[in-house]
Length: 144
Length: 96
Image 1: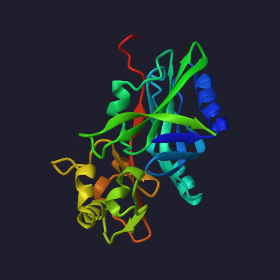
Image 2 (image 1 turned 180 degrees about the vertical axis):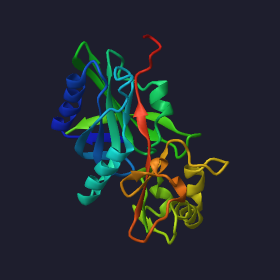
Image 3 (image 1 turned 60 degrees about the vertical axis):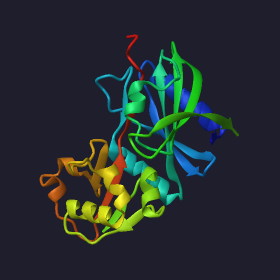
């Protein structure tokens, strides 16, 4: 499984993390998915509603997500994943990231932003089909 | 009425992005959905029959949790339900 996005979009998700530093940024990947590839056609920035803990938590308002989904549908696209940043923290999913992951089959990407500069960007697909068997599986990011 | 199915649950609706049910309340619509697509029931509801905490349901643009009648809210054929799982997370704070 591979996450494919344009170099422009790859740089944009990293730039988003730098802009919101020292807070976590978050956003949505729109595109199409097949058995071995998640193809991102567009990224959409989202608001982080965790105003109580912006430096280490994010949450996308479901109402905003529905509007993004509607936009995607009008373009023949689906929600295929999400991205967020970890300010001064590794680009690795946390126990919180895992507990709050429910979009099976979708990509999750994290960028570490160290002292305001984007460092690593990693990605995983949430495998499984339930809360009981879900797992994060590392996937390659292919920039085109 | 139409019910929009999120990406991770479409495998249980024959990959359909939306399905149509005939129901007069939000709860009746969700129950009919689970009857028509039985594999969805465990993903939407707990063993006690409550909506799972991370499953958000919107009636048009309104979160049903904040509607006065919640799941008992009346619906019509032109309404749309959207099921949308939560998306959240964040860095571990074990080193904070």
